[in-house]
Every structure is written in structure tokens, then in C-alpha cells.
Length: 325
Image (cartoon, rainbow, N blue to C red; front, side, top):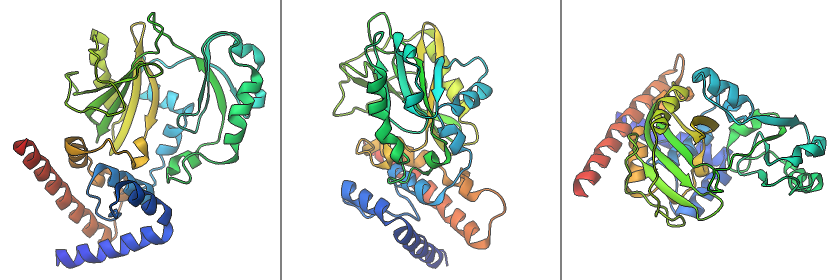
């Protein structure tokens, strides 16, 4: 009976995905040369695709908003710092020119990587800012690649203070992967705008074996007591969410919130291979998603039960891989 139920759900949900979101599945195939299973995802990247197609957690909208997320983070972890916001406007034309008289970063609240750095006073002009951001006002970031939470955000532009360490580098980023409110691993990015270096860390700050081909791994971070508080803060911010990456950084003895990330690499990253992929897949329990919240019709209860079987299978697959290694 379970086999027939699984086959039926697999057929219906995948047909729905191909009918509604063919561009997402084709893009996935183009990168991985594998037809994705949008009903019973078999990997971390496929689960991100599943989230794009099926889940619509309304909490993700304000948490995606890089301005609104600050208050959410500070409510979840009182005392957590955020960079000072120097200006907020509806368009880049609203930027007061005197904002650029100090080092700062110009950003939009709904986008990824849309940042313009004013490294020194008046390095940028207002015209530079307008020319960079005006084209980005024509479309909603993430729409074409299925990152639907950005469409829930009213676009704003803002400037925030720029932190630079005595070394001249920006502070190290700690991108913390949480599943069901628990931290699995952390990705440390050092010298992001120079000789960029990647270090993968366990919750106790010990290194994992994961490396990124396009990043150096020749860096030994020197941790201070404050760094051991990162996990606790991330878990408090991620409570009640099936998966979210919590991005933090440390500067001058304080922990700062950067942003929440719900679609890392847009689910199209070739970095998620081997044990990293297997581990994240085994940790991500889709039953915790908003898709299965509240009273469920009969077919969804069956679907949920079959996904639970898949989660147990993923854990066994990971165990077998680790024993073999």
C-alpha cells in the first residue's frame, strides 16, 4: 500500500512542479544533470527546491527583509548587536550625499549580493549609487529562481556603517546552518574581499574536512570566548524553523547579526557534495516545515509519514557513508 501511495504522490506532486515551475526544474537539471524529485527530495539541494515549490512559510517574508530582520533577531536574542543604519529610502535617488562622507555600505533590503561599498569618505558619488541600483529596481530579486520570500518584502534602500578590522579586512563571517533549531555546522569566510578563505566548523569550533575549491583553506582562526556564544545565539534565532542559515559576525568584542538565509546558493550549489550533502539531508526534517502545519487532510498525513521514512533512510545512508570512510 505504501508503495502505491508513494508512487501516486510522487507522480502528482512532480507533475504539479513541472506544470507550475518548469524553469526551476530545468535549471536544476542543467547544473546537476539529474532530474530532481520535487515530491521526495533526496538531497539538501533538492530540499531547497522542494521549499521553493511547496512551502510558503509566512515568517520568511519579514525575516528575509534585511531591515525588519534586525528587530526579529534582537527580539530572539536580546543584546545582539546590528550595524547602525545611517539612512533608509524608497529609491537610491533619496540618498543624502553627506552619507557618503564616511565609510559605509549601501544595500537593498531584498536582495543578495546587491551591496555597494564606500570604503573611504566620498570614494563613491551619489551618481555611482544611483547608477548601480536603478536597474535593480525593475525586478524582484529571486523571482526567476524561485526564492519567493523576497516578493513578500517592500523594497527599500539603506546605508549602514562599515566595519573594518585593524588588519584592514572586513570581519570574518559566520554562516551558521541550523536544522530544527539546532546547529549542524558553521561556514567561516575570512578576508571576503581579498584572499578569500573558507573554513568549515563544527558547533564546538573544531574544523571539519570540508573544503571549497575556489577558496583557500590556509587559515587558522583564533577564537575568543565570545565566539563560543555564536551557537547559542543562532539556535535561539532559529527556534521553530525547519532550516535556516543564521549569518553573524564578531567585531570589537561584540556579536552582530547580519541576516537570515533561506535559500543558500539558491539550492544550486555544487559545493554540497559527499558527506556535507548527506549530513544536511539527514538533518533536515521537512515535517517541521509550515507546509505540514495545522490540521492535515488524509493525503498529507500519508505524505508526511512517507517523508519520515525517507528521513530515517537518509540517516542510515549517512551512517553507512561514515563507516565506509
